[in-house]
Length: 292
Image 1 (cartoon, rainbow, N blue to C red):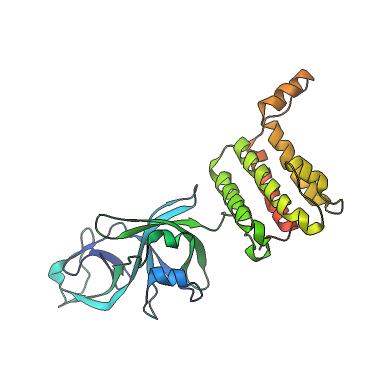
Image 2: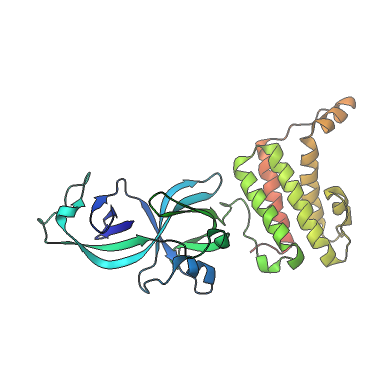
């Protein structure tokens, strides 16, 4: 499949013989190539030094932070197309009379050079050197026309959490921390308050269990027991984890029944409580020195 751009104003698609105007205009992003990322280079192939590949977005879901689309690399700069083989509909033909040829920048759909699962979580940067966003490739599928549809997941948590400084994480717990962080980021956008608090509590347990050995403590048990092992000179960490732990119990029917027997009514977990638990997770990451 060919994607052709005419004077940076219109986008056409088709093949070597015929092009149709794309309406509405597709969302196209430049791909920032990181020479230190050989896996990404394996996907994108040998690229034109002055013209980066393009990512064509087909869909984006801000709830899951999932973006799906196709990659294109420069096929031929200023490729000539016979005007009789170019359909401008629903646009009007370009002004200035009928030329002998339309000169267009032509891009060809990228096909991965290797087995798709080997690209899992490959880092891709979209935008330009000064304004770019980071995405992981989490999947790819071959379409009926031979193109490859890639599924990307944003590294950004859309402001809900700080970015992780991965180099500072304990090496033996890095994968567990990264997975837990991703679960919190997902939960913050699509779960109800009680499951958000549950996910935050579990992640808090993971990070405290990974951090406590670095201060000479031996982590054991659930979050409540880990909190008691936090040194007294880290009162902020102890308090933040304690609030998350308390919010967790409030969402349980057994706790509500236990308090009811004492003629106490505990407030239900609200949306604001869910947001608070996510914010407290961010606070813990900053206090532990694991936030970028």
